[in-house]
Length: 246
Image: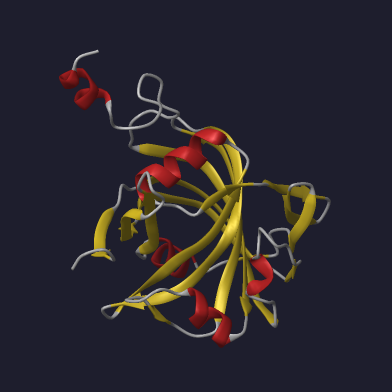
């Protein structure tokens, strides 16, 4: 393989057999269970990196079922997002993600910098309840429940929330384990179709784990539950801050 061939093919790893195809990445029938809850403001402040600014004491725990996604296949994901602001713009900081499929773990980390780790999330309907669970290495670390489709949600408010910017930190180590890339990345959800949106009574339990510290943002009070069904495209990102720039 010539040097020019390496340059042409070197857009993802492994070089000759990337773990995922090039984007864009379209998701059909992407289903969310989102439980919003009040937590400790000091805990939020300890986790949100500058130049992002915290925006209150309510965070969101999400369980997401993705049965049809371009290149990534069928998988389930779970994690926490924290409402923040950047230069006066409101959005969310993606704090933690756990999922059960190698391709979106590799693609999410390499392209955007999603904080993805291998876990075993499940989103299912059981009789009159929508249930989300998250296990890490066989240990239950989160359980969310919601009454199934009790009331229609405010679709305009949901679409406005989904259209907000999302921020995360992309980290790529150098060969000596020093950071070679450390950037704040912004991305958006695009070409959104909201097929359904419902609210209802919700509950959330988080459990301590040394390597999956979701309980570092403890549940003080559940403030709402949201169930969504969407089609969307995961937009590619842009760098908004370089932590290594001098």
